[in-house]
Amino acid sequence: MKSGIVFDIQNLSFHDGPGLRTTVFLKGCPLRCPWCSNPESQDPRPQLMLYPERCVNCGECVKVCPTGAAEGKGICTNCGRCVDACLHGARKIAGREMTSEEVIKEVLKDKVFYGADGGVTVSGGEALMQPEFLLEILHGCKEEGIHTVLDSTAFCKPEIFRKIIPYVDLAYVDMKCIIPEIHEKLMAVKNDWILENIKYMDQNGHAFNIRMPIIPGYNDSDEIIDETIRFLKELKSDFKTWLLPFHAYGKSKYPRIGMEWPMGDMKNMDRSEAEPLADKFREANLNVEIQ
Image (cartoon, rainbow, N blue to C red; front, side, top):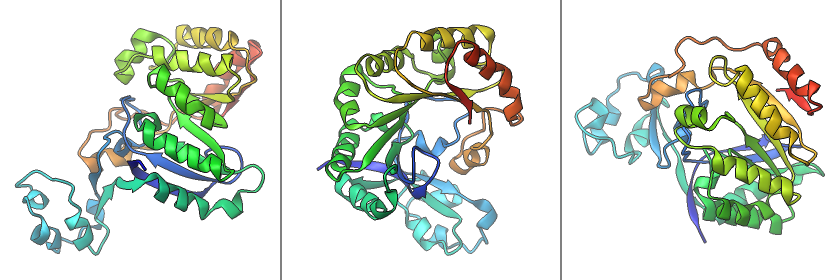
């Protein structure tokens, strides 16, 4: 039985696949998208999150901290003692170790609510960073007759992806940028595995949909949009493409883990601003929606 790091489990979710779902968020992501809405998901290890607006300066965290990190005099080891000592919720550990069996037991609590369409969605971070743990979760869900969705960037070695995808009923794949050089510059990784894994699903009858965040000035140029449409037009599957207008969902989380929000004062993008891009996809006879 494999263990992994889970940073959240959301019960009874409507937003991560068809029907009513349980969404399991695995920790760790190799991509470094500047607009990431879950920066606490990037580091594969548990980490401390601070909520200073809740702090009443009672000093209980200082008393129990073994390294002095609670008063800025040492290195935090994420032991969690300060979290247990804080009565005001000013400290939280993002990420906990769980076995695949424990995850499946949590999922089964919601099974009665799934109906014909619902099920489990495994997301991240990037769930494919923990492939053996992910595989056991998906396999266990399939044994229980539960519909499975993988919400992913599809960034992993193709040989790993091909072992996992048979246990996935539907994949949601984020396409950040089709141009390899720009993708690597923005996300810190190449996109060749991503594109190969999408083509593999297309060629082998695995159901998938595409999600593309639209970040003004980053991935919305004519060149990027035109190349994205060209790539999608070559696929033979019946899939949907969702365009996701930029929103600064993660902005408040960055300082909680000691990071600076990379996107500055960029304003949230209105749905109407994405309509001209959506029209380009529609003109190419692609099934597209703005989410």
